[in-house]
Image (cartoon, rainbow, N blue to C red; front, side, top):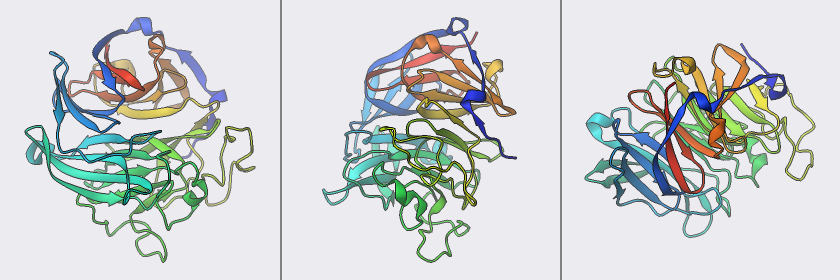
Length: 358
C-alpha cells in the first residue's frame, strides 16, 4: 500500500524536551559523522577529516584507529559511515564509506572492508568504487545497511551537478547499490541481465540519500534530501525508479523549476515529503523497550528543523517533533545494545548526547 502526504497535512505535535533529560557524553569532536556501538560502553565513530576512533562513554577516553584510507575532506565529503559486519563478534570485520580522489583527479565514493584488531585496520580492501566521478564531494550518500540475507546496500548520491544521470543505469549517480560482503554481485540483482546497466544497481532515481533502515521484517526504508522542499521518505523495492529529477516536489535553490511534474508513469511516489525541507540526515527504526512511547517508530534526525521526527510505522499521517529544546543540527542517531538513544550533533566541535528515558 502506498501513501503520499505532504507535510502540510501532518498533524504536528511538539513533544516537549522537558519530558526527557539529556546527557552530553562526548564533546569537542572533529566533525564526527557516524557511530556504531561495540558494547554498551564503547563506540566506534568516524570523523570526516579521516579519523576512525574508539571512545569509552564512561571514562571519556578516545583511541585513534590506525591504517585509515586517505580521504577527500571538503564540502560534504570525507570519512562517512561505519558499520559492523553481521558476524562482527567472530570476524571483527567492519565497513567504511568515504570519498577519495581517483588517480589524484576526480572524486568518487568508496566502500572498504577491514578487520579491527588492536586498534588498527588490517586486511583492508576496497570492495566498491562508484562510477560517479565529480570535481567536488557533494551529495555522496554513503549510507550502509545489511539486508537479512547478508548482502549490503550502499547509497550513492546524485553528485549535485550530475542529477540527470540519476535516471540512467550506466552509472552510480543517484543509485542504491547492492553487493555481497566481499564486493561481488548477487546473482538476483534486478539489472544483472540488462544491457548497458550496471549489475550492482538495486534502485535508481534518487537524490542524496542519508537515511537507510532495514526493519526486522526485512523492509527497506530510505530518506533523501530534496532540493528546496521535497525531502522524501521512501520504501525501497528492487528495480524501481524513484523519479529524481524527472519528478520532484521541490524547486531549485535559486527558485527555478527543476521539473514541472510530481508524477509520471513508471516512477514511484514517496510515502511522504517534507515541504519545507527539514534536511533529514539519519534514521533508525526503534524496536526496543526503554522508551515505550517510541517503540515501532521511525526516528529521523534533521539538520534544518533541529529536531528528531517521530513517525509511527502503523500511522504515517502523524509526525511528532522530539528533543526540540536541544536546538542543535542533528547528524546521526543510534540506539545502544540496551536501547538507549544517542544523538550526534552536526559540524565541527560536535558532541554525542544521550537521551534519558522519561
